Length: 577
Image 1 (cartoon, helix red, strand yellow):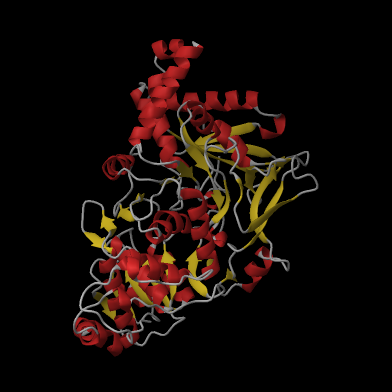
Image 2 (image 1 turned 135 degrees about the vertical axis):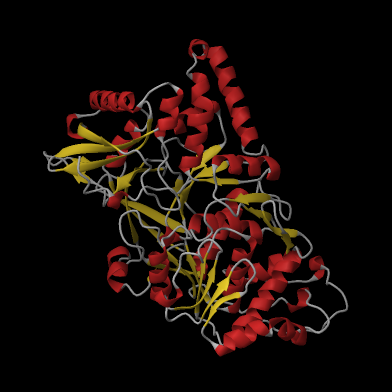
């Protein structure tokens, strides 16, 4: 809440002269500090739309605080947000935390029934909703809500509270009554939070099961911000840096590294506000020229498969690639073109959120393109492992992040796959209203059992092999990691994506072909089917007997995915082949 007992001044205070003492783990103090220090700088832009400066964000936050207070909300109440990335989403999120309420970000790509379930399960009193989501949700399915507020203009969509209705109707008058002359930097004072206090409930996107509400404390938000400062600052200038926000803000990956870090550093965040197609993404990169690029593998893989590999497949290019000196010049040119495509001013591209195709990763490494692969989980808000691109070991996901410990639950962590366990400042408090899942995931010594399987080399680099829930058992008792087989299969001609499942003692592949590429090369559906069978035989020549694929089924449409573009594997485990 805002302390208005300060002595007012007749004009905007000089942000550089207004001191804020930001103590250790004081996440809310960091919000205060960045607003004051960057008062007159651009903060948020809806891409090809309106721009808000830090002072605009502060005033909008204050108006929402007045709305919350007069509607009867108290610290600790839950406020849900569901909509596409935009400036007002970010404002509502910041207003919720700085008021002392608990934010409940909901992925806008969830189906309406999932949104209803999360709102009800979280006990949210208010829901901020985007203009695309509002068309699908059913207010009567969320009976405990006191109001639904439209993100685009903060108008009431549904109101079940006289206090809320009155507060919204009189909001401008209440704001003018509280600040009859002005709202300046000296009025920016928010309710402080202890590091162990609950900041948000973030519901997992769920590749293997139903979403769970992850209880994220302020210390985890602070630690992830501090991590970003330690690894990004060399490429992200204080008060001048730019980023394009593409990944969902409701997901911890996008929230932490395309929004929170840049805002705290006084950066300018461009929210894409629309479906992030490759065309729109690279148009935005070219115009904004971001200083850091956060990506999921699918975006990088599409760029390489659509823009790079077709050129390298030309007979003349294949011949040139056999000549070492010319090959390196070609790779250098590809690196330069890729660097320009991402805006040409970034320090590195950080890839995370899902498994990276090994062939594309190896190709990028050969070109010298500045990229790295990180590893995280919603339960760690999200960072677990990372390495700077100059130190990155291909095939790994880096080393354990600062303020975190990691061990492999294996008798020989370097050679025998085991579950990845982590503990430290980034780890969640548990799952909301789910003590059983909390006990299964957080042990008595504070170790978070990730469910991911991997090994760790002598230098501390972590290599992920798959999910424990996905692991299959071969006929002779051999552990089979379907992700390893899928990675090989996805590198074969005209394979866009695949899932390996088990029926009895045999393995089968579900394959979605790249029909665009096949059509470009003159293949009809019958020829594509023949190629997929040829791919199966080729794969079986590459893998040991226990990984051989007995048959396949072709899917004409993409597999259903989470917003971070991981396949919802659990939907396909019982498919007929």
